Image (cartoon, rainbow, N blue to C red):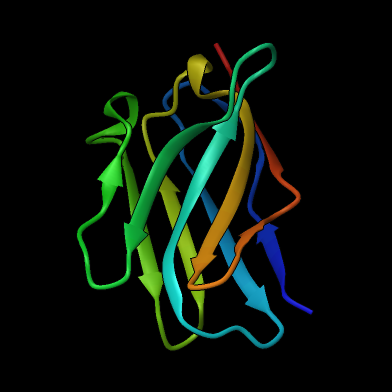
Length: 115
């Protein structure tokens, strides 16, 4: 059974940094894309950053220049480096993995940025 194991959330002051990691547990084949989404209270889940297989990374405009996505195909991991964090970045962050046959979501990790 495939599971996405997320780590790295927490509380940080504005201007600080956090790193979120997501590792795929279990047998998985034909990964087409990996990335991170987030959902703030009262808002819809939105894309933060995602990288398709063999493609370039797509970032939300609100995080461009501050967040960087790294994908390790050998280890089936995806990492989100978040710098210059702002209070509006506060949300639950979810890892997502797309395969040829299914979409997998992590359980989410809370990121809270205090002003």
